Amino acid sequence: MPERTPIIAGNWKMHRDHLEAIQLVQKLAYHLGEEDYEGQEIVVCPPFVALRSIQTLIQSDKLPIGLGAQTCHDEDEGAFTGEISAPMLARLDVRYVLCGHSERRAMFGETNEVVNRKLRAVQRHGMRPILCVGESLEQREGGDAVDVVVDQLRGSLDGISIADASELVVAYEPVWAIGTGRNATPQDAQEMCAAIRTEVGELYGAGTAEGLRVQYGGSVKPGNVRDLMGQPDIDGALVGGASLSSEDFALIVGHRRH
Ligand code: PEP
Image: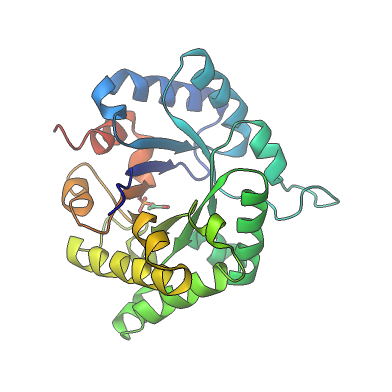
């Protein structure tokens, strides 16, 4: 079985201007020890306006932290007022781009088709998508959670090659757990992450499925990260609120030694 390098990413959403962002990453680096960087990837996804500052900080301080963006447009350039393209992000050394976060699906009308185009744009420019999927509370209570997530996966991955699928990270984020303080139980999260791996196996074969990194996201905190990350099919965490505190995010990243 291939070793999967865990990946812990902080999604800052629309929080922190570029000066606050610098401070947050500096404090995070202060709290982290060398061993925290070993055998896992650490990523921060600040707002667009802070990307250049954080790129410079990462370079100048030689921080082993990856830069991520929260979304991008699917066209490379054009008359799309207010939008940011994948090549612009690639020029800033952005390594990961969140695609199809539930807030974008719910508030900005991103369908699976749109998410699919964004995935392609990200991969066209040598970056890796973190494809976000997850069911609502109503869908879970109705017993449809797995069907909904499988449907999001299939739609978002339509026509994506095996080579591109093997670069992908999938984040399972139940909508009812995001920003609510109510995380999925490790067992429920494991079950869905295993179902995601099975579906990717159906689509791309066992090798791709075994190499796929699946994150859990939804109210991850220092107190629950270890049980979640201890599950066999959970290879990382996508962290919202708790990533805005350097102490909490450092505890989450350093969960192996706390
Ligand atoms: C998120 O927005 O991706 C997220 C998981 O948020 P929170 O950790 O705050 O639930």
